[in-house]
Length: 340
Ligand code: SAH
Image (spheres, helix red, strand yellow):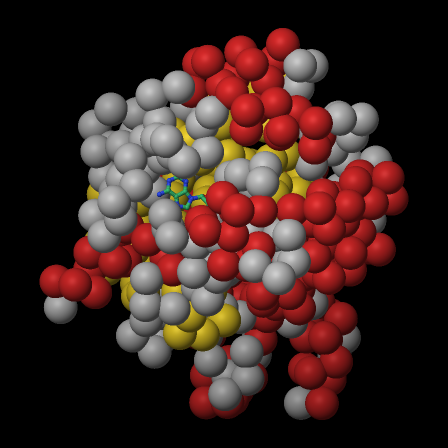
């Protein structure tokens, strides 16, 4: 089955041309797909014969709401979508003053194995296609009736482990005839795949790169994040520094505060040293409890923050949204799998 929604307008045009359609059909179809039509039949300005032909040869992905939880505290909505093959993924809609933000998944499951993360349990099942990543934005907007203005790629999966599809998704969601979301309104979070960070640097996209650091020393980071083993914090920070120099875009470092593991003053000092001279920004996150993990949230967030700030690092403490609805990505899918 052909996946039209993963195609750029030019690709769509070329494909429809093969079906003897005039060039303007490509953009017509593109606009419909990006409006979230649920059948080819809905594409009312396309000839009926073409709509019928497409519905027989192409797959139109339409995720189905398997579960939907709305936070009573802050209005955050968490969607568990069922995909065409029965796999489920999560998307979160968060309402901030600066606009509505969706947190999208990039894979079904994840292979990175971070010990504190619910998405890692069970490994990676498969990559999402560009259309399936895009669908999360389109159908969250459609279902909620809320205009989406920002995207964070911080859901299930490691986006740089699905590099080509993620790049295509970015091009699609950024397109003026589609969702038209500016690159500066998109953040991409990675556990730190160095070669892919280098590759991304060459593209000079205006998005914000977030790096999940979580520890400044190899001993701790390798224990928390298997991806660090055999590579190390040093080379990762070198790649980050290079990324900043090439793109001029400051990196945001994510740091989930874990009790007795990565929250000492010595680690704050080491972290400040790592970031010296690259204007990086640290985002401290309260660890979300994952039922399967013995790790506990740190009680030293303020002290750690102050210690970093006294050493010239800019720090924000992430506001916690949706704490009553398993909003930490991976948790709802996990629960759903266990209940089945
Ligand atoms: N694979 C990407 C993006 C997905 S996770 C990455 O590693 O960056 C998005 C962020 O949530 C990452 O910083 C991740 O480390 C963090 N995270 C995962 N589980 C968490 C938990 N239980 N508590 C707090 N943060 C968590």
